[in-house]
Structure formats: structure tokens, C-alpha cells
Length: 395
Ligand SMILES: *Cc1c(COP(=O)(O)O)cnc(C)c1O
Image (tube, rainbow, N blue to C red; front, side):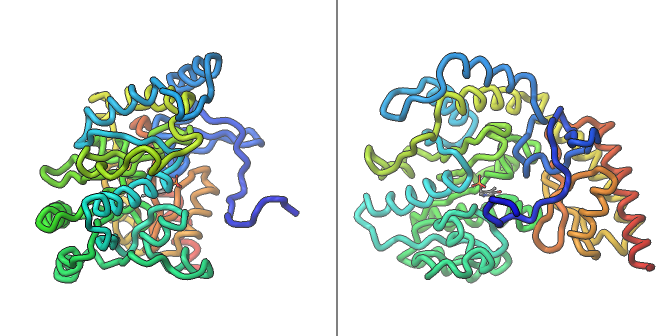
């Protein structure tokens, strides 16, 4: 009997070592990792640059408290704000905490301007914003809310394809903010259209509502730009949550905002014990400098095109298995006609790790550093997996 809280369905292999795109189990087998800690180990496992940054900081100073200045926070905030719409950053330990900061900031903005009645946050069906109480209410996913008491007031969710309803909701006098993932991750790698992102920006501006982007999964180079919304002009949010690949596997999140959107957040309104501690900042700075390098982002675009071309060929070869290939960059969703859990198990038999996603997808979230040769290995193993699924269907 395990002594662990039973909240995960864990796959069988026990991994003891990682290197680049590969994981090694306790039996000496190598696995090609297209889960990447769910889009978190963006620079691969045990990236030597990150390992060096962590070790160097570990010998100097681990933790002090946010009651003292932490120079690493200034350095990482400077990088993140220079590279984005944002003026300010708050550091947290996870994506959910970055979302909590974003939700609090949006409501506080209106309250501080004398409009405390503007407290409704509009989210979208199929979204995922994390597992804290605020985050599950922002996404509204019934499976995550069930049994946890009353839903919080001030949240509503709409479908992304009903613009009339969205426009009405944004125009309501109680609206504080809209929260959206520019590319839904858990929902099955669903990229929002440029038109929707721009309409949201304009509708929010028209009534003074704030726009929050959740780029916890889609950010930090995942789509081939530093942030997914940067593929488009004039869609940038007022507030953005970032985490996952920000620390390359070291727990760190950030809430970025314009000075205006953050204007309600004054000393005493928010905080965190661990958020932005020196260890997290040392790794975050090293990861940022690697990911934001133009050559890295160009590599993501090239290797994702290569992978997507291969997946399109697989879809043509196995139309009874693969219904659609979607997402953006290396946030890839493969929508299946066969049960995604069965597909994942069949892939594992070929030592290929893929993640599940909504709408019966599997997601491929390899490290940004995956090589073209490794992408070819992933495609070969997916081809074999599709073949095995055919056999299962025939049986
Ligand atoms: C993973 C994720 C979160 C939650 O992050 P945690 O670090 O698990 O709290 C929030 N939003 C999105 C889009 C995510 O993918």
C-alpha cells in the first residue's frame, strides 16, 4: 500500500535519470520523452547550462525571504518585461499561483479605482488554469470542481465560438477581466484564432476590462515564439501567467503585468514565502537566456514543422486512427479516433512517452531542444503505434 495521497494515475516506468530528450528507467531502458514534464523541461533533462546555474547558486545562497531584496528577481523580471508587453513581474512557485496573482490583480485593479462591483472573470470551456480553488473556478471544469463545495461567485465560462455571448458578457458592468489560454494545453492543444484574440483585446479595451493570458503552457518558446500571443499583432494582454518551462523543471512561476493593470497591488496585498527565491531565479535566468535566443526559437519552428509534416503523413496513412493534428509549434495535439489512453499505452510499449489531452487527444510536448533525428524517431514510434492500434481494432 502506498503512503501517497491517491490523486494520480501513474504510468509504470520508474525513471532514474534524464538527459536531453531521453529518460532512463531503473531497468536501463531509454525512453524518448515527448511529455517533457508537461511542457516543463523545455531545455531537456539535466541541461548542462541549468545544472551549472543551479549548482553555482546552491553553493552561495538558497533562500532568504521577500522581506529582503533578491537581485535575481530584478534580473529575471528585467528580461521578462523587456521581452513582452509587461512592466512588472511577481514571482511564484507554480502556474496555479501565477494564476491566483493574476485573478487577484484583476479584481483589485477595479476595486482600487472605486469599482469593486467589477469582479466577474470570464473564462472559456475547455480551459485549464491549475488546481487551486481560484484556478478551478476560473476554468469551470466540472470534473475539477465536483465535491469541493460551492463554486466561487464571480466566474463564468463561455464557449470560444459564440462571439455574441462573449461580447455581451464582456460589456456587462460587473466584468473585471477575461482569462484565456492563447493555445489551450490540457484542453487538447487548441490554438485560439488570431481573430478571437484580437476581438477579445478590443472588447476589453472598449469597456475597461482587463485581459489575462494564461501562457503557463504555451509560453517560454513552446510555440516557436517566446510567448504564443506574440505570433499576432495587437492582441497582447494586460496580465499574463507564466510557469512550466520558465524554470526548466525547477518550480517557478510568474505573473507579468502592465503598470496600469498592477496598480491596485500595493505592499501587503500579495506575497509568497518561496516565490522568487535565489535558487529559482538562478535557474530561471539561465533558462530564459537559452530559450529567448533567436536560434533556439528558430529551431523550435523548424523542428515543429518537420514533426508536423511527418504527423500529416501519418494522418494520411492512418485516417481511421488520427483525426486531426493541431496546436502550435511544439505544443502538438493529435486527435484520435481510438481511445487516447490505449494509444498512450501502446506508445509506451515502444518506449515513447506522450501526454493525454482533452477531446481525446494525445499531446506531444518534447523539449524545445529535440533534434530532427529524435523527431524522426518519435515519428517512427508513432507509426508503429498507429499500426498496433489497427491490429487492436481488427482483433
Ligand atoms: C499547468 C498549467 C497550469 C497550472 O500550473 P501548475 O504549475 O500545475 O500549478 C495553469 N495553466 C495552464 C495553461 C497550465 O498548462
